[in-house]
Amino acid sequence: MAKEKRIARARTQYTDYLVKEPMELMDFLATQMPDASRTKLKSLLSKRIVYVDSVITTQYNFLLKPGMKVQISREKGRKEFSHRQMKIVYEDAYIIVIEKMQGLLSVKTERQKEHTAYTILNEYVQRSGKQHRVYIVHRLDRDTSGLMMFAKDEKTQDTLRNNWHNIVFDRRYVAVVSGEMEKNAGSVSSWLTDRKLFVSSSPFDDGGKEAITHYRTIKRANGYSLVELTLETGRKNQIRVHMQDLEHPIIGDGRYGLEEINPIGRLALHAFKLCFYHPITGESMSFETPYPPDFKKLFLKHYGENKIDTKQ
Image (cartoon, rainbow, N blue to C red; front, side, top):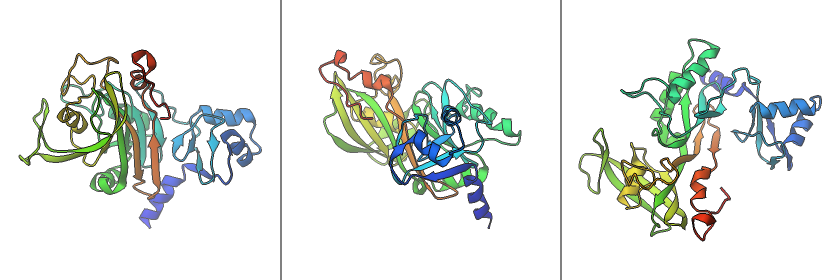
């Protein structure tokens, strides 16, 4: 019974509509809410409370397909959130999914205890009550941008942490690495040991933790490669170390690469996809962000003869 109440609580924050035939988002909203003016419908989009398959959608002419789910938050922007270093892409009673910008710490360290994604979100949820807070589930490096998830209560945090590999079924990154990758696809496996200032990698079991990274080369041009990476394990600095192992370090990585190779002024690593089963409802949730424009520009014509595939 308690689980049923938790599921109901997660779902009652949204009004759900199932798409049965192709049409643009604005037209769909008008058919579902015939008494609402066009101005009112546009305001729903501008307030970022309309979701299509769990992704905030503000494009009025977004083309819906049969089987898609449109959700409208019932909070109507009550707790508005705006921050230049992160944005909320999904929130319900139990989880928050954010997109973190590069340069922002996920959680506090010995040197920095304020101004992290964690503290910013805590301030946000406490507007609804001082007893509210967020709970850490996983982390991204300071210089890595992309999607992260936080829990909104301790029980959900435990569920996510204890069942992470069963709950999260697709987690992908994109990186720009130095040089042209020799293979179109492959895997890297090693044992990683955290030595505080850096993570060391060994091809043999030397007491470290086994780490496995799968990669797919998307583009080669201008002395760089655009690579999509999937984690089978989630170790500290895993992708950065494994790219160094392949002798194709991520550009902008002063710790595991060559700091002078930094044409865009940042570590070129972005967590662009996060798919999981909702820890309470069991629903399949899928979130995806575009590849950062700075990554794409390294492959444009004025950097060389080739153009990047811009379908992402």
